[in-house]
Image 1 (spheres, rainbow, N blue to C red):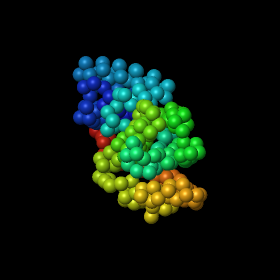
Image 2 (cartoon, one colour):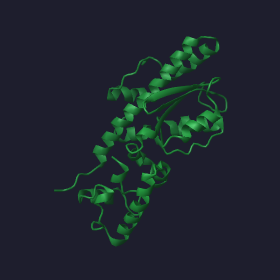
Image 3 (spheres, one colour):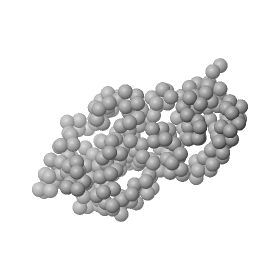
Image 4 (spheres, rainbow, N blue to C red):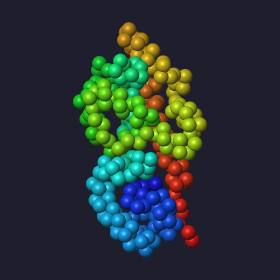
Length: 248
C-alpha cells in the first residue's frame, strides 16, 4: 500500500469511511471526486490531498509521520523504501544508565554498515546517519533501541519510526525477531547466536579477540538487514488484510 491509497489522516475519516471510499472505487487520491462522502468530509479530504501532494513530491516523510496514526506507519514504507534506514543496536546490558552501546547496525539502500564503540560510533556520526533517513525501521526499537541511543548519545531522534514488532503482531506474528524470521522463512548466517552471546563477544573483543568483534558485527548485520526482508513480507500481508477492492 502507498500513501496515495490512504485517507485516514483526514479528520473524521476512520477505517470504516476509508473502506467505503475504496469499495466505491476511490482507491487513490486521483480517484476522489467528493461524491462518496458528505460535503464537510469531502472538503477536508480535498484539502488534505492538496497539501499532502506537495509534501510527497518534496519527499517530506516527516509530514506524513505527523499526519498518520503510528499504527499505520507501515503505509509509508513503499513510498520511502529507498530512504529507509533499518537500525539495530548491541549493548552490554538493558539499562542505559549502567550499560554501553557497543555496535549500531545501519542498513540502507541494500548496504549495511556497523558503527563500533571506540572506532566510529560517535554522536556526530549517528546524528548524520539518521538525519538522512526518511523512515526508521526497528524491531522493538520504540522501547529499547531508540531510547537507549537518545539517552546514551544525547540525541533527539525524530525520524518517523516504524517498529516492526507491532505490525507483526497485527498479522499474528508474535515473539522475537529471530522467531518471526523462522516463521516466515528468513534465514540468517548465525542462527545459534543470541543477545547474551552479543555481550559475551564484546567482552572477548575487549580482551583482544578481533575475531569476536567480527562475529558480533555479523550477528548485528543479520538483525539489521533481515528487517528489510521482513518489512516487505509484513507490509504485503497488511495490505491484503486492510485494503478493500472496489465493488463491481
